[in-house]
Image (cartoon, rainbow, N blue to C red; front, top):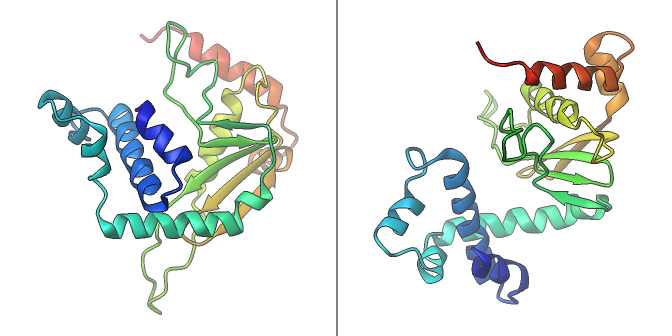
Length: 205
């Protein structure tokens, strides 16, 4: 894993770095989904073939080209709009591994108070044969859930955002406005976070 991360972050060979990123994504998927749903990495480990070179071979040429295209689009449409401090894959008090963990929740990115979720979904074709970018309510609720889990306000979340990677589209909302609109009135975030915290401390029946 460390060797793959080093290649992904430091290699001047764009294709090699992209293959390393793909390999790391496979490792993350295996960790999150488990061997039943993502058997490739566990099978390689069990067979004694889990090596850097083996993992670098997992992405075919089409996958490499697709990932490079997404990267270049993000460099134009997303990266220039972000500011630090950055937290990659942030977890929260209730979702950090350990005895106090109550839920599995890991966001994509917090950048300068912007809680950002990155979507790579390609919309289905409509009657005109086009694939318009579609904002789904569940995507917004997911971000709100993360914001509510930030019990101690560790990440100083002030904005919610969704980046549609295949469309190069970044949408942002002030957290205060999003919560007031969706709740239908004034929303006390600190009170809501406390309620979520208390709920998560209850023992399951």
